[in-house]
Length: 148
Image: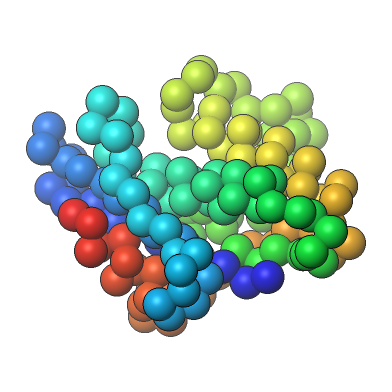
């Protein structure tokens, strides 16, 4: 299964900042999801929205029968998310994990990694991240921006 995700934010780096996320299974798919990052959450950034989107992808798959899937490819235009999940997390794991305080980027990345490890035990092809250019992720970006 290939799923694309994106985050967006309005008024970044201000108290009025608001972030949103999108998950796209394809143009006009009934499985597509959008959401705003809850306003009480202080991490109102595109990067945090993308982490939330990836966690929602894993949550969605956990609530469906794993036997129906061979693997998951998470497509993102986020250099931050891609590098975190394909490099940093493994470096941190060798050192005992990320020094994470609940609610921080690091904590959410560690939680995402834990969810992925659990999923990979059920999927023959595992979970992979694929980095694309933003313009090649237009559907997910459009969805994320549509809720701001």
